[in-house]
Length: 274
Image 1: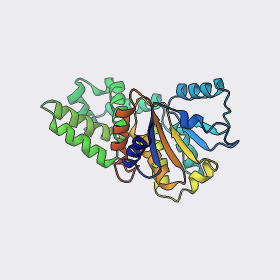
Image 2: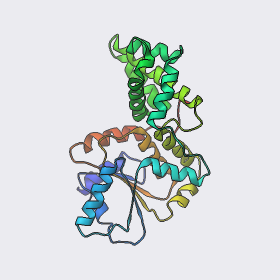
Image 3: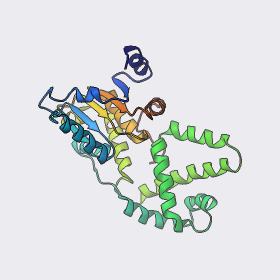
């Protein structure tokens, strides 16, 4: 990567945040530089963490400088340092609650009946898939939800009405799930809680959880989910660390554009559901 390209990439990103595409050499170069874990490597999928460890090992490079993890674990450690609960519903428990919610006559069932037809209670897995995808796209941030709504209103009928029902119904589902459990509604909800905890504090919880970390490196992405982006944005804004996103050569340019759009929202961690 040339210096000018690196400069162009940095110019569209917050201070302390950079992107590299098609190479993990900056990460590999850290191997052997220290015997403490100065680089927190976040990879959402375990396979990617294993592959990176294997690459380091096959190259004869030590792992001492790295701490490999995933977003939910980072969020849980931060919340634990602040004395916050870290439990969340797993998919099985969430589907059971969704079955109860969709069996009732509420705004939720009205919206999803228009989309799915029949009895929404028999389509819990479809509703869960929609909830998961919208959560990944927006993290329920007000600016992103408004953007989704504007796009929905701009497409032809009847797709506009269906998209509007998906959005309104999914937000109602998330709100109702929250009313029926003392746990976070998903692991991504734990990530949102940690994002807000970091954004509203002085970084002390981060320093306690990761006292030797100087860099946060995000790798192994096929998409850039909004909950992860918001968490890392809060880390970059409030903690004394560098942040580098390492994207693949084929998808990197597109994902970088998506990443820049996601980072543009103010106050990461804000939500329209409570």
